[in-house]
Amino acid sequence: MTRILTAFRLWSHALLAVLVLGLPAAAAPFAAYVMDARTGQPIYRQNSDTRLHPASLTKMMTLYLAFTAIESGQVRLDSKFTISSNAAAEPPSKLGLRAGQQIELRYLIRAAAIKSANDAATAIGEGIAGSEDAFAQRMTQMARALGMNNTQFRNANGLTQDGHYSTAHDMSQLGRHLFYDFPQYYNLFSRRSADAGIAQVASTNRRFLDAYQGADGIKTGYTRAAGFNLTASAQRGNKRLIASVFGGTSTAHRNQVMAELLDSSFTRIPDRVREVRPARPRLVAQAAPTRRAQVEPTPAATSPEPQRLVLQASPPPSTRPAAAASTLVAARPAMNLTEALRKATAVEPGTATTVLASSNRPKARPGSSNRAIEQAVANAVAMDEEPSASLAKPVLAASKRPVRSPRRSASTADVISEASAPAPVAAAPVQQASAEDMQLDSSHAPRPRSETVILAAMGEGDRSPVEELEVVRRPADSGRNWGIALGMYTSKVEAEHQLVSMALQDGSIFGGARREVANTNRGFEPRFGNLTKGVAQLACDRLHSRSQDCTVIAN
Image (tube, rainbow, N blue to C red; front, side):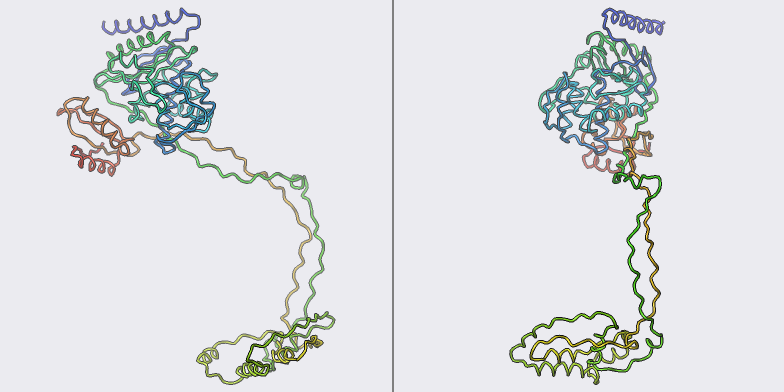
């Protein structure tokens, strides 16, 4: 009998909502969905998969992506976003941002979540993705990853636009992910007011939060096409519900329908149930592709037949007379420097000779004479033929001496003697060398070079498109099978308060941890899960230093 009465009440309220909504000519369609937040199981549904205008419930996804960007390190809460003219021109509700103004992300989040400011939501999307269109694509990708299969986004604020739609089921699903995926930010949705940097903003959901016991979020929305929408979360004891209502006729009517749906659903779910956390998506950022140079094809490169370019013919190099091997190996008789200089300056018959212009002899240093210079040179030449007392002589004698060059070198004696003449004179006529004195190794003639060059067709380079952001799923624990317990408390409220307090103090450790309160025979035990063993031990060491009970446990 109780179930029959409960079902009758639900259907009567739904019928009343439909009748009331049907009175105005421009009333929006009605839809509702209630789920058990602990398991994700539906409790009540009406038009829950009908695609309707979500209005400002859209900002729930905007905030979800903002929290994701913060967690991944793409931005920080104190990152300053520059307001564009597009964001500043958004219609109310708005924070009052001006084009060119810079404001921290934390204030934009507060304004979008609490006041439902359209300009703040647009600024968040543009600051994270570069443009609102690119951000809307990310929103739709994330919606698919979260199982919101009947949702598509066109903007970050929820203003009415073609192709921008969602359902009561999908928004309830998004609210559940906000609760489980970002518990460190979830209390933002229960705040009645907040400092948004340039103004103090009040919550658009404060009436429902104040009127309904256990309500702690989430988001309101209104446009003329959507009606009055609300996604709410409430907790009573161990039970938690998340529900969405689309198409209310007024704020009061919407809140009343939501309260009655939650009251009826709380009586239909068990007090204790095994919690099934939603699988959290993971964003995999693709590396930016390397852009190659774009080469414009020339007519020669794109012609059907390869073009032939003929190089100008050049005369082949003249061959040199080959030398006998015995001539190179045989030892040459010693010759003086004058003979070597004469033969080095000799040229082949028929070759033009180059006569060097005479230059003035450099002036001698004071205290020196030409005779002294000639004597020094003669002594240096004589040292080459006489035994030396140098310590390095035995080492040099034991080493292999280099083979003489085929060409005969000349002595510097004649050069010096000619340079010591009283007046500058022209170089003496060059005597021609014999074939025996100018012998070179025989070498093969170089192979003739091809006189044609074939140009192959060249491509236009790599024009592959930029790879999109991939959204994949991963298990919620990610292999983390450790946690910590914070002692026993007499009430669940005290245990939850301790979890929130620890998460705020050590956000770097507990930011991604799973929070839960275990109801044991000795009392309520607050626990952090989804940690590695090393992180759990580090957290306990910190808490022990603050005289806080802490025990490392295995999940």
